[in-house]
Length: 244
Image (cartoon, rainbow, N blue to C red; front, side, top):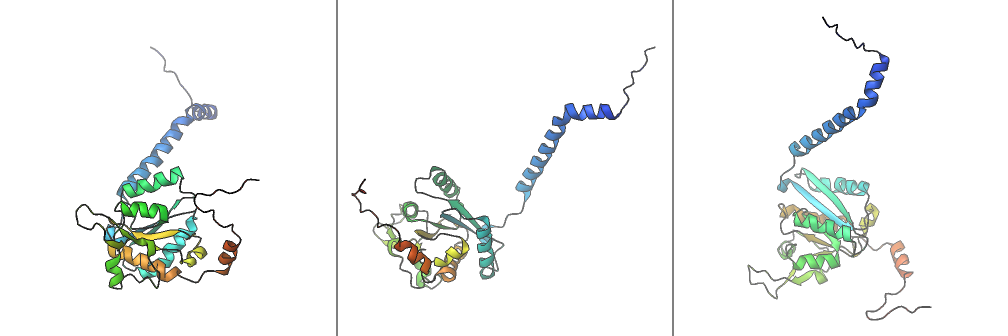
């Protein structure tokens, strides 16, 4: 008869076990956390499109505290909405490859009900049909511009499905006078407001555009006037700065 080999469990054996098999437990924990996050992200409740408004701020870096504060400020004006999401795309320069790729990806996925973005990007996307004309809401008073001249926001966009060639419509509103955004940590200079044509919540997206105007349209702060006065004059097109 063969005697059974006894392997007594002691402190040294336990220590050796965890020393050489630690990676198995680490992998088990990581797999468990990943699996739980995956299950949560798939099953988490998401408000329907007509119960939320997603806003994208395409400007210089905005801190998360600022977007959270904007959501808190807007909440009382949208009591029927389940979610107000303010997100940012940090675009330091127009040739920022990563920021442009991120912006194009979001738009390609039809994300966002309202965008605030620089003019160069705004007019490009507007002519591509991203934004919906705002004339109807401006005329019936749903969108009060409070004296803001849409100016360049009047564009002639050709619709292949409709004979609209040559007709001027207001596709965006300049955010240049929304100086109150500075107090919220958002640089409004050069930004335009547009409502996406694919929005599943057009009435509240337009209402959000009006909220931005009514909430943040203020007189130009003196500190900004002083700052701009110290900046060098822009170089006219076709000319170059002298070298010394």
